[in-house]
Image 1: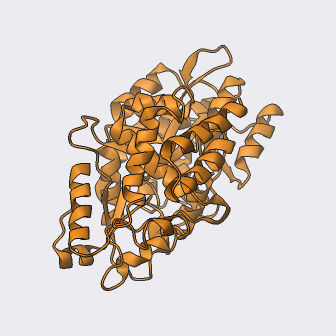
Image 2 (image 1 turned 180 degrees about the horizontal axis):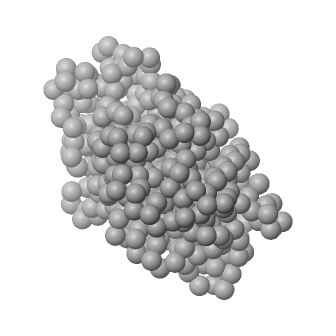
Image 3 (image 1 turned 90 degrees about the horizontal axis):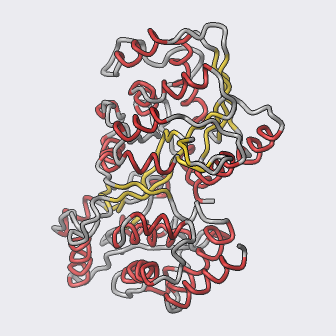
Length: 447
């Protein structure tokens, strides 16, 4: 799944020389521009001396050290001991533990799908209406986060089970500021502007886009992000949700139109480096390199926040929000991914942890180090270590709608199979409607 791939890349991209958790507090309480008031208020309200909070998730290596650096503040504030265990096979391990009634207090899920399945089986504890209200009031696009964390329980009734913490943004366009300045290009503020810029670059005798779908056995996945972003820019989020749930079929005209919106970029020989036929065979990791040649082989690359890992060393790069249509009236939708926390074995410490991750300090400690974005409106964004991370988080805070990567929410045979291969067929010349029908027939066959 793409979520696992992104998590692995993010772990390798963390900044060297950051503070590591070693049982001590990374930042001394009271120092710096952190929201220490939220820490002090939380500490005054909780005494968990002698209790232990157990937590597991997909974070290993440097990411595990970072979450432990946050947990150290919870331990200091409450007197509780915190035990975090990360695993590359988290998805399998947590199900086995829940079935054996030996689950930890809190589990960190990289995708909503598994959490929803475990909620339906009675393995998760509802977080309550007060937590849902808090998310609506304190997260940008708050209702989106409530919706993403709300699942049917064993009784069939919906409740909030998942609290999102640590988010990735995908609705980004990368470019070289030096190349843009040299050519006199401005950052587009709408999809209409982006298309006009693409046409201007063509008129100037250059190529606007670097696009590559190659990824070994996962070839095709970058196109699914394009289609998902285009659907959020052409249809209300309810259509996106229904499509992901197979209530709106792939061959619905609105979905086909979103695929064709992607095709307006990827199947346009004038728009893409190497021509449309090169899109399917160019490795996605290699495709952005053309932005940094002189003169540029291409000027823009739409990809998630991890992609600079594959840019040439010392390259000059920046990004802007992949914009919505000004005429569409759909606000500023953002596509992304993220991790959610759920209670898998209830206890006072587990309940207190969910309260803790609502405090600004629980977000600021990680974001001040590296690799963390948050929709929390109450954090001090000046604490981000780089302007780039701060600007990326501003895109998240400016979202009017947030939606999780759709292909990661679909059955594996579709989201990590037929959808991927179907997009390769499409960019190499197949009709969008025929491709969509084939994907839907595959989905119907596994119901």
